[in-house]
Amino acid sequence: MYTHSKQIRTGGQPVASANAALIMLHGRGASAEDIMGLAGHINVADMAVYAPQATNNSWYPYSFMNPVADNQPALDSAIELIEQTVQIAISDGFAASKIFFTGFSQGACLTLEYIARNAKQFGGAAAFTGGLIGAELDLKNYTGDFGGTPIFIATGNPDLHVPLSRVEESVSILTKMNADVTLKVYPGRPHTISMEELKLANQIVFDSQNHH
Image (cartoon, rainbow, N blue to C red; front, side):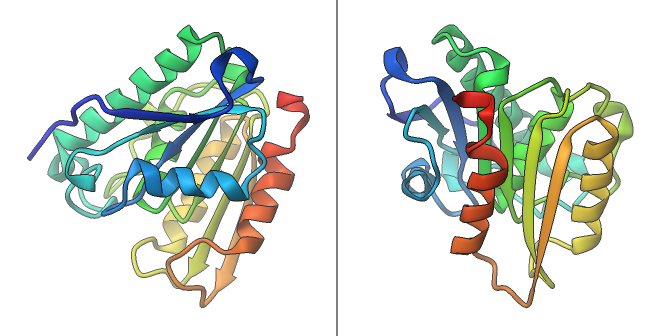
């Protein structure tokens, strides 16, 4: 088991001229550079990009559907690294309402878990194939108010790694926390990100008036 060293890649617009921040979380076996490649497909022209790198290219060892204890201490360490990334964005001058999140697969699970545990009015979030983490979800972890934050979640059905039932359960929790959630389910889609999902993420999250 492992904890994550603090490695955070940055890119996008220089902080001084950026209007918003985007935190990008890569999937299992991938890297910060890989997920930053997605920025070319989303409307982030005026955003500073922050992409933490998982040690061993994996945020936690087992499935997100395993008991949380199985994935410790890596999971807590991953959430702490996202918190550190958020704090860097804040110290760079971005209010929470100007901070956006996106992630794919394991990174999408972490995106949702982090924002749900730290709910406030963020800029928005796009989770490509993911859900909240744990064999059973502990609702005590999810108590804040998103203040209408737009959240886009897309998933395939069936998906090899992410059961639709967990995605729907996550949507229901986030909605109760006053997030404006859009779920899009793609029958039979492989475990990947489609161009249509990126287009929807732009419409629902990244083109929002929140960062213009």
